[in-house]
Image 1 (cartoon, helix red, strand yellow):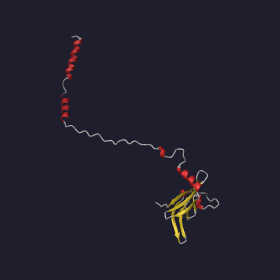
Image 2: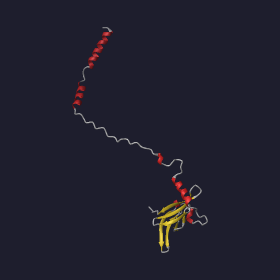
Image 3: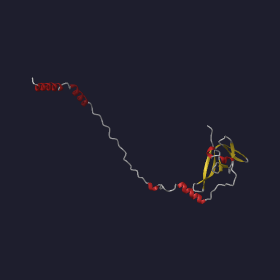
Image 4: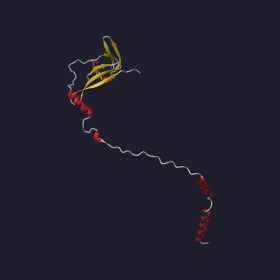
Length: 173
């Protein structure tokens, strides 16, 4: 037997082996085709895209002064605001307002006071027209749960600006 004939015989045997044994695969395909077809869910509805319109022309120009500085300049030009450096300083003017806390109120027939605690834990009586804080804060109103101050602070442009500040009652936890 020649090698060519032997090769042909081997190929015929191999090809004949591939032709059988697919009954299980054919049965699986038939079973899958016999099942009822499922429903495909509909395509979701997407919201249409809304384009964003950038309207920077309505905003402040980047090199203009902010509005609060412009308001401070107008306020400074309207009034001659300046702290009274000739008066003697009160004790609570040696502390920042943020370091002080309102702890209560007192009152009788002669008047009404608010109790302020300093950072050392000492309690002081304060009434309207007293000064509190390092920014020349004058007491303008006393409430049951708050004290209103009017501070005079530098505006950064060589002048002074009045700034309201409130100190609220601190309730112990």
